[in-house]
Image 1 (tube, rainbow, N blue to C red):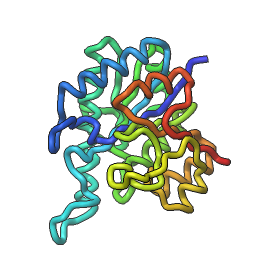
Image 2 (image 1 turned 60 degrees about the horizontal axis):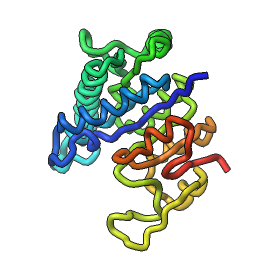
Image 3 (image 1 turned 135 degrees about the vertical axis):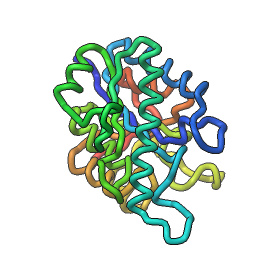
Length: 234
Protein backbone atom coordinates (compact mmCIF):
# COMPACT_ATOMS: atom_id res chain seq x y z
CA UNK A 1 0.00 0.00 0.00
CA UNK A 2 1.27 3.48 -0.89
CA UNK A 3 2.39 5.71 1.94
CA UNK A 4 0.69 9.08 2.26
CA UNK A 5 2.03 12.05 4.20
CA UNK A 6 1.04 15.65 4.81
CA UNK A 7 4.05 17.96 4.90
CA UNK A 8 3.79 21.25 6.79
CA UNK A 9 6.25 23.77 5.43
CA UNK A 10 6.86 27.21 6.86
CA UNK A 11 6.81 30.16 4.50
CA UNK A 12 10.35 30.89 5.68
CA UNK A 13 11.53 27.66 4.03
CA UNK A 14 10.90 29.31 0.66
CA UNK A 15 12.88 32.49 1.23
CA UNK A 16 16.33 30.97 1.60
CA UNK A 17 18.79 33.65 2.66
CA UNK A 18 16.45 36.47 1.66
CA UNK A 19 14.99 38.72 4.34
CA UNK A 20 11.53 38.11 2.92
CA UNK A 21 9.86 36.89 -0.26
CA UNK A 22 10.64 33.81 -2.36
CA UNK A 23 14.06 32.49 -3.31
CA UNK A 24 13.29 30.73 -6.57
CA UNK A 25 16.59 28.79 -6.70
CA UNK A 26 15.84 27.38 -3.23
CA UNK A 27 12.27 26.54 -4.22
CA UNK A 28 13.56 24.83 -7.35
CA UNK A 29 15.94 22.63 -5.35
CA UNK A 30 13.22 21.77 -2.86
CA UNK A 31 10.71 20.78 -5.54
CA UNK A 32 13.28 18.70 -7.38
CA UNK A 33 13.70 16.67 -4.18
CA UNK A 34 9.96 16.44 -3.61
CA UNK A 35 9.32 15.35 -7.20
CA UNK A 36 11.81 12.51 -6.87
CA UNK A 37 10.04 11.28 -3.74
CA UNK A 38 6.61 11.44 -5.38
CA UNK A 39 7.84 9.57 -8.47
CA UNK A 40 8.84 6.69 -6.19
CA UNK A 41 5.18 6.18 -5.33
CA UNK A 42 4.68 8.28 -2.19
CA UNK A 43 1.56 10.44 -1.89
CA UNK A 44 2.43 13.92 -0.64
CA UNK A 45 0.08 16.71 0.35
CA UNK A 46 1.37 20.11 1.45
CA UNK A 47 0.31 22.99 3.65
CA UNK A 48 2.58 26.02 3.43
CA UNK A 49 2.61 29.05 5.69
CA UNK A 50 2.82 32.62 4.42
CA UNK A 51 5.26 34.14 6.90
CA UNK A 52 7.88 34.87 4.23
CA UNK A 53 5.42 37.36 2.73
CA UNK A 54 3.23 38.59 5.57
CA UNK A 55 2.52 37.77 9.21
CA UNK A 56 -0.88 39.10 10.19
CA UNK A 57 -0.72 37.71 13.74
CA UNK A 58 2.46 39.64 14.54
CA UNK A 59 1.92 42.85 12.62
CA UNK A 60 3.63 45.64 14.58
CA UNK A 61 1.58 48.54 13.21
CA UNK A 62 -0.45 50.05 16.03
CA UNK A 63 -4.15 49.39 15.69
CA UNK A 64 -3.76 47.06 12.71
CA UNK A 65 -6.86 44.90 12.23
CA UNK A 66 -6.08 41.23 12.96
CA UNK A 67 -8.82 39.89 10.69
CA UNK A 68 -7.53 41.86 7.72
CA UNK A 69 -4.01 40.76 8.55
CA UNK A 70 -4.99 37.09 8.64
CA UNK A 71 -6.83 37.47 5.34
CA UNK A 72 -3.64 38.86 3.79
CA UNK A 73 -1.79 35.91 5.28
CA UNK A 74 -4.21 33.48 3.62
CA UNK A 75 -3.50 35.08 0.26
CA UNK A 76 0.23 34.82 0.99
CA UNK A 77 -0.16 31.04 1.41
CA UNK A 78 -1.81 30.95 -2.02
CA UNK A 79 1.20 32.68 -3.58
CA UNK A 80 3.55 30.18 -1.97
CA UNK A 81 1.36 27.24 -2.96
CA UNK A 82 1.23 28.31 -6.59
CA UNK A 83 5.01 28.66 -6.56
CA UNK A 84 5.45 25.12 -5.27
CA UNK A 85 2.90 23.62 -7.64
CA UNK A 86 4.48 25.26 -10.68
CA UNK A 87 7.91 23.80 -9.89
CA UNK A 88 6.50 20.34 -9.19
CA UNK A 89 4.79 20.41 -12.57
CA UNK A 90 8.07 21.52 -14.12
CA UNK A 91 9.65 18.33 -12.75
CA UNK A 92 6.93 16.13 -14.21
CA UNK A 93 4.55 15.80 -11.26
CA UNK A 94 0.86 16.53 -11.71
CA UNK A 95 -0.05 19.02 -9.00
CA UNK A 96 -3.19 20.90 -8.07
CA UNK A 97 -3.81 23.69 -5.58
CA UNK A 98 -6.91 23.55 -3.40
CA UNK A 99 -7.95 26.51 -1.31
CA UNK A 100 -9.99 27.04 1.84
CA UNK A 101 -11.12 30.39 0.41
CA UNK A 102 -12.63 31.14 -2.98
CA UNK A 103 -10.01 32.26 -5.50
CA UNK A 104 -11.86 31.90 -8.80
CA UNK A 105 -9.63 30.88 -11.69
CA UNK A 106 -6.64 30.29 -9.40
CA UNK A 107 -7.49 27.42 -7.05
CA UNK A 108 -10.55 25.27 -6.46
CA UNK A 109 -12.09 24.60 -3.07
CA UNK A 110 -11.27 21.38 -1.23
CA UNK A 111 -12.64 18.33 -2.99
CA UNK A 112 -11.69 14.97 -1.52
CA UNK A 113 -12.63 13.04 -4.66
CA UNK A 114 -10.34 15.25 -6.73
CA UNK A 115 -7.54 14.72 -4.21
CA UNK A 116 -7.88 10.95 -4.52
CA UNK A 117 -7.95 11.22 -8.30
CA UNK A 118 -4.69 13.17 -8.33
CA UNK A 119 -3.01 10.76 -5.91
CA UNK A 120 -4.02 7.82 -8.12
CA UNK A 121 -2.15 9.54 -10.93
CA UNK A 122 0.96 9.85 -8.71
CA UNK A 123 0.39 13.56 -8.36
CA UNK A 124 0.50 15.97 -5.43
CA UNK A 125 -1.90 18.41 -3.80
CA UNK A 126 -1.03 21.75 -2.20
CA UNK A 127 -3.57 23.21 0.22
CA UNK A 128 -3.67 26.98 0.71
CA UNK A 129 -5.79 29.54 2.53
CA UNK A 130 -5.36 27.98 5.96
CA UNK A 131 -8.76 26.97 7.30
CA UNK A 132 -10.41 29.96 5.64
CA UNK A 133 -10.84 31.65 9.02
CA UNK A 134 -8.90 34.34 10.90
CA UNK A 135 -7.35 33.54 14.28
CA UNK A 136 -6.50 30.00 13.11
CA UNK A 137 -2.94 29.04 12.22
CA UNK A 138 -1.69 27.04 9.24
CA UNK A 139 -0.53 24.45 11.80
CA UNK A 140 -4.18 23.69 12.56
CA UNK A 141 -4.98 23.75 8.85
CA UNK A 142 -2.24 21.17 8.26
CA UNK A 143 -3.66 18.85 10.91
CA UNK A 144 -7.16 19.13 9.45
CA UNK A 145 -5.91 18.37 5.95
CA UNK A 146 -3.84 15.40 7.17
CA UNK A 147 -7.03 13.94 8.62
CA UNK A 148 -9.14 14.74 5.57
CA UNK A 149 -6.75 12.95 3.21
CA UNK A 150 -6.17 10.03 5.60
CA UNK A 151 -2.43 10.63 5.84
CA UNK A 152 -0.26 8.07 7.59
CA UNK A 153 1.53 10.88 9.40
CA UNK A 154 2.13 14.60 9.35
CA UNK A 155 5.66 15.86 8.84
CA UNK A 156 6.75 19.29 10.04
CA UNK A 157 9.86 20.26 8.10
CA UNK A 158 11.90 22.91 9.91
CA UNK A 159 15.38 24.41 10.09
CA UNK A 160 16.31 22.31 13.13
CA UNK A 161 16.72 18.54 13.41
CA UNK A 162 13.85 17.89 15.82
CA UNK A 163 12.14 19.10 18.97
CA UNK A 164 14.23 20.59 21.78
CA UNK A 165 13.37 21.55 25.34
CA UNK A 166 14.44 25.12 24.45
CA UNK A 167 15.67 27.03 21.44
CA UNK A 168 18.91 25.34 20.28
CA UNK A 169 19.97 28.50 18.46
CA UNK A 170 19.94 30.44 21.73
CA UNK A 171 20.95 27.81 24.29
CA UNK A 172 23.99 25.56 23.87
CA UNK A 173 22.65 23.12 26.48
CA UNK A 174 19.32 22.59 24.70
CA UNK A 175 18.23 18.94 24.85
CA UNK A 176 16.84 17.19 21.77
CA UNK A 177 14.05 14.65 22.12
CA UNK A 178 14.15 11.52 19.98
CA UNK A 179 10.58 10.81 21.03
CA UNK A 180 8.09 12.81 23.06
CA UNK A 181 4.37 12.60 23.78
CA UNK A 182 1.73 15.20 23.03
CA UNK A 183 1.02 15.47 26.75
CA UNK A 184 4.67 16.31 27.46
CA UNK A 185 4.70 18.99 24.75
CA UNK A 186 1.53 20.56 26.12
CA UNK A 187 2.62 20.32 29.77
CA UNK A 188 6.09 21.76 29.12
CA UNK A 189 4.71 24.39 26.73
CA UNK A 190 7.21 23.44 24.02
CA UNK A 191 6.65 25.45 20.85
CA UNK A 192 6.16 22.92 18.08
CA UNK A 193 2.71 23.73 16.76
CA UNK A 194 -0.04 25.79 18.31
CA UNK A 195 -2.09 24.25 21.11
CA UNK A 196 -5.18 23.67 18.95
CA UNK A 197 -3.12 21.65 16.47
CA UNK A 198 -1.50 19.64 19.27
CA UNK A 199 -4.83 18.76 20.85
CA UNK A 200 -6.29 17.72 17.49
CA UNK A 201 -3.29 15.50 16.74
CA UNK A 202 -3.56 13.86 20.15
CA UNK A 203 -7.31 13.31 19.94
CA UNK A 204 -7.08 11.74 16.49
CA UNK A 205 -3.94 9.72 17.31
CA UNK A 206 -2.07 11.13 14.34
CA UNK A 207 1.67 10.56 14.22
CA UNK A 208 3.82 13.70 13.98
CA UNK A 209 7.46 13.81 12.97
CA UNK A 210 9.58 16.98 13.17
CA UNK A 211 12.90 17.12 11.31
CA UNK A 212 15.36 19.26 9.36
CA UNK A 213 14.28 20.03 5.81
CA UNK A 214 17.82 20.83 4.70
CA UNK A 215 19.32 17.33 4.92
CA UNK A 216 18.09 13.93 3.73
CA UNK A 217 15.62 13.49 6.61
CA UNK A 218 12.58 13.98 4.38
CA UNK A 219 13.67 11.29 1.94
CA UNK A 220 14.35 8.90 4.82
CA UNK A 221 11.06 9.69 6.55
CA UNK A 222 9.12 8.94 3.37
CA UNK A 223 10.62 5.44 3.30
CA UNK A 224 9.25 4.78 6.80
CA UNK A 225 12.38 5.61 8.79
CA UNK A 226 12.02 7.54 12.03
CA UNK A 227 14.05 10.75 11.87
CA UNK A 228 14.25 13.94 13.90
CA UNK A 229 11.73 13.73 16.70
CA UNK A 230 8.70 11.42 16.73
CA UNK A 231 5.66 12.63 18.66
CA UNK A 232 3.36 9.89 19.97
CA UNK A 233 0.26 9.47 22.11
CA UNK A 234 2.13 7.68 24.89
